[in-house]
Image (tube, rainbow, N blue to C red; front, side):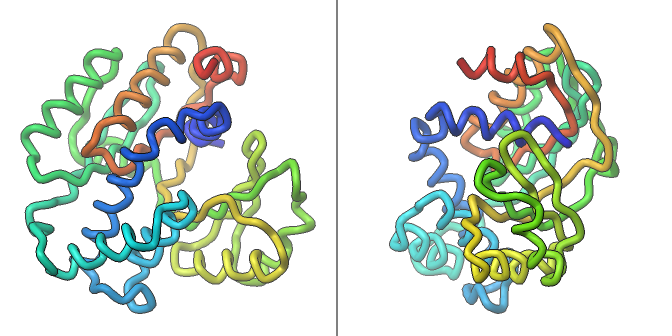
Length: 249
């Protein structure tokens, strides 16, 4: 299983996510705005918007903030048309494949910043299509593995889930993107507390990275995630648990 989800989970437990909540809300709002602009303001008729709104709710984003982001995407007093989605593909230390999904109003600025981050942390940007084939879009619902077991998640299979994967202290329920909402609703109806649900680019295979290369890779991943224009970062690395804990300390 990809190590980037383990890394994000460890940082969240240690409070890193809370310290950056304002930045997180800004990114979530931008994703909602673009989804509403491209597919309409009704979440029931716009799966991308429904997913973006649910992700914001999972992060405890206030309802007013969510509605304002939808309104901006709907053209109510906004410059939403200036925002475009840009996908960057590259390799990190140890040969890990990395997809960077950015939402930006200045493609040149974001491209330069992303290229600099890769270069600074011993990675390299690739051509379009160079690593995208390693990933596939999936619906992913995350629950706490310390509270639930696979038997508790059988209802998700009945709702369309394809697999339940153990990932450190998480269980990741994987489905086709179109089944994501039904899977989440089935789990919640069964009393299972969902930590998050999203459309994610899941890697078909992983690359194990160790030692100083692993440390450089995690620093690159953080640098990309922390950039204001970067919406999501997907990667296929697997890093030893002791290195994850060391750098999160």
